[in-house]
Amino acid sequence: MPELSRFYGIIITMYASDHNPPHFHAEYSGQEALFNIIDGVFVKGNLPTKEARLVLAWYELHRDELIQNWENLSSGKPHAKIQPLN
Image (cartoon, rainbow, N blue to C red; front, top):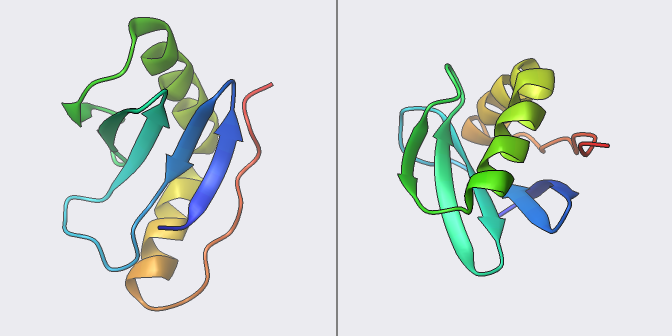
């Protein structure tokens, strides 16, 4: 699974040719959650509250890049790294 970004111990990934709706995975300390790319809504899984908020702040900054990565990975093209949250 391609790693898109990493910050504050959180790893953001996305599977190539994954199921709809478009989403990304956020992992922190052995816990994982899925977030919808279109609206940032939590889909399933579990993350601590602080880390979930950091993921959503990062999402707000990089939504368009996430959409582009989803489209690229869905069509067999390479993914692009996304800047971490600073």
